[in-house]
Length: 174
Image 1 (cartoon, rainbow, N blue to C red):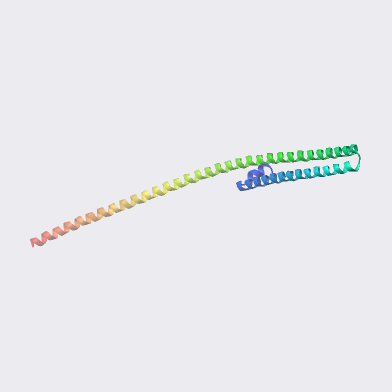
Image 2 (spheres, one colour):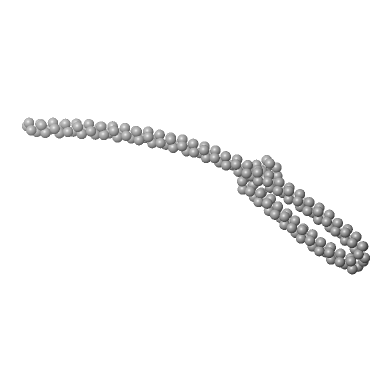
């Protein structure tokens, strides 16, 4: 998978890939252990054949045959181990690269999330400020209206008192 394709993957997908490659690496190690066990088995079979050769023919002929078999088995085992080591190194390199890319992607996602939060916070603050200003204006209008009403009521009460006093004075004069 190339770098562009990996950049398009989400965090969970990248972590899933990392898990898959780790599992593949473990599977390769298990195969290597199985092959080592198989090599031990071949060595045991070789020992059995060596005994059979000693019993079947001269010691010199058996030694020549055993040496040839041991050399062939050793050569095969060495090639197998080299292949396993090479595959393990490639797998570790790939896993390390994917881990670096995953970490990089996580950092980028975190930066993006922080920026979105900052923008949302600024927008929320702006809306709160607008609502607060509107509430202050409304309260100012309501206060002004209430003050005017109270002034009117107060004037009307003064006029009413004045009229009552005038009526009282007139009644006394009569």
